[in-house]
Image (cartoon, rainbow, N blue to C red; front, side, top):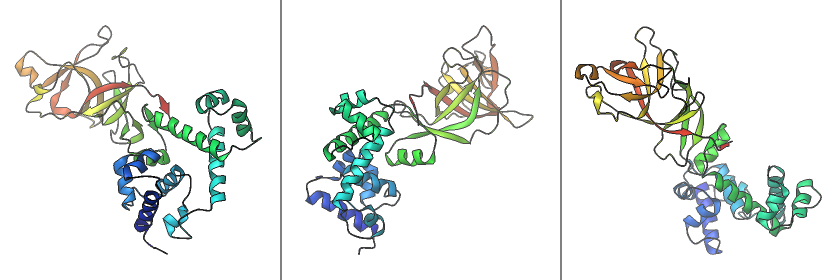
Length: 314
């Protein structure tokens, strides 16, 4: 028995090479639909990436031919019992259909398996053949891949770990509401509520929620915004891109609490005022007046990259 999991995962990879399943590590990543650098690290034995979940997914990607207990603990032999393997594949296909909200018609249309057969699998009347089970599993794997092109909300630790293993860049949603009005005092900015995946916002760093209607209709109350931290020097406060929408965190002089504002920042034409204040302007100017942001009290500046729409909530 080989006691080293790094050696065992290497034996698994060599088996896949020798038997023509793959020709390079990139093939493993593509078959698993995992991030290539993370997959390479896992196959090299890096325990940050070589997790139980990775081993299970690798095994499933190659038809469950391996004994995962051997890979993880060294017990038994490398290859799984073939009959047990078939049963697991078939059961996984049944579970995927049963847990899906897709109609029998939709699954049948997309897979080429008859609608009656899909209905029988779902209702437990019959089981799919091994060939049909693999078609079903591959179909649902592709559906999962399509989700990676959508905005996702990650609510649980399991979802977070799965997303990280797949190489998704996750953005924290901070437990902090930028006030769309002027008077709301808010608390800590550093508590993370959950995580988001935004494939179309490559340089975003965080998500926050808007409170108040002063920035409607572009940013209505309750909407989420994607933010990127913007560095500036207080000695040169007029070097920021005025006219953009910013999230500004300001410390209250009396209480030490934080005001969070989402506003268009404008520059004073008077040089003496421009050194001390930014003009905070609302989109709804009929109901909300401009006000000053004391630059000395600014504790954080973020530029708003986009108004986020959640396509999928996990």
